[in-house]
Length: 382
Image (tube, rainbow, N blue to C red):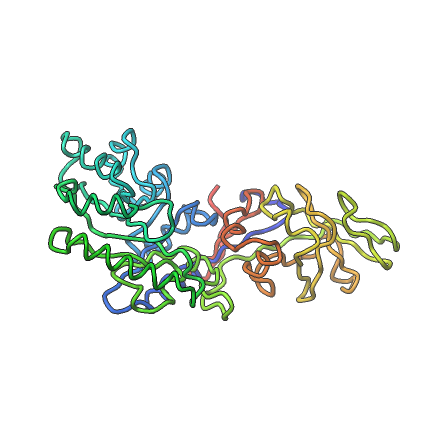
């Protein structure tokens, strides 16, 4: 019997769509540019054990994770891939980075010194001195700030012995195509590349995230790092989504109640019906990552007909107003489309006051998870 065989909802994850999205993004890059796969946060919550091998089988060889732990987990799944870790090494982590053949993204002078010391002390083989250098151009979180970049330019010996394969930065507002900061960051990144001197650091460059790919060839450089677009989120908000849909969340009605005018629904009596109504309960709640902020805001669909969420989302349940839907289709056990199809994840996120990233990474473990691969459906890993 598959995991969660009697779950109140099924989450279907289309690996074929993820692969198609990866390939589609590659066709949008300028000639010579490559496309990596960002699989941090358990492949945006969709299951790294399934997603990473599917991308690898399609030809993806470069993967990005967020932390050392994620990199270690990915290395066990993909022993031959090139795995980059965004957070870079603390001194106590450097040896494990080397042991796991992980490529750190060096975000400050301290990390540069740590990684160089790992090899100066004879703790790593020469072929494992590879790293990525991250220059901050406006995010003001990870990456060398201007003063540390200036220090590195003045003291290039700090990189002696290291194989810097890419110099990268990260766009802050790429999903807003006309945002002036995109161009400002691009100019700052190009200036940083010039100041680091190509003959001294003969590295390639990486700049574009998912939305950055759609800003045009000036932003592509040598390696793009898409994440959200791989998983079907729209990298071009306000325009039709160019990516294939990846997830579908379907629940089942557990009970239907007939209630009279003036009766309330759910905790806090936040919804009071103004007519005789039929209220359907579906066993999905915020413990499953179905956000409480969806209360009285989001919708579900039954046979293509909208069924508004009424009352608060609770830990294990949501309640839907199904008064306008035929009773034939709202019996206990009847299917309900919660996310996907007529209600894409970005639309659900907007109605819930958040973004698709949070929805995907919040999807819980109580769902029965199924994967579509090579056109066939299979159960999730146990």
